[in-house]
Length: 132
Image (tube, rainbow, N blue to C red; front, top):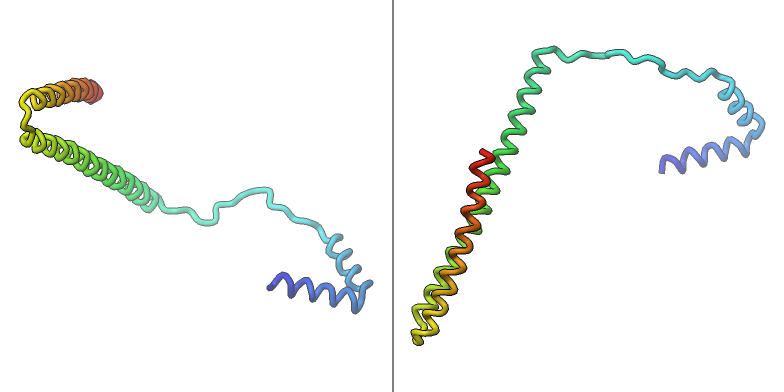
C-alpha cells in the first residue's frame, strides 16, 4: 500500500511538472555519496555482564543436554518395556500350548533368540565401557 502511494505521488509530480521532477533527480545525483569507511564501538558491554552472559549460555547448553539425555533415557525405558511386554505375552501363549513337542520347539527358538540378543548387548556394553 505504501509503495503504491509513493508511486502514484511520483507519477502525479511527473505529470504536473516533468522538467521540475527531472531537475530534482539530477540534483540528487550531483550530491556526494557518503560511505562508512570505519567502524566504531558505540557501546561496550561491561566485562562482568559479558562474563555473566557466558555463564548463563553455558548453563542453558548444559540444561539442554540434560533434557536431551533425560528424553533419550525415557525413550530407552519405553523400548525395554515393550521388549519385556512382548516376552511376557509370548510366555503366556506358550503356557497355552498343548503340544509338548511344539512348545519345546518354540521355547528353544525363544532361548536361542534371547541368547543372541544377550550376546549383542554384551558387545555393546563392552564398547560403552571402553569409551567411558
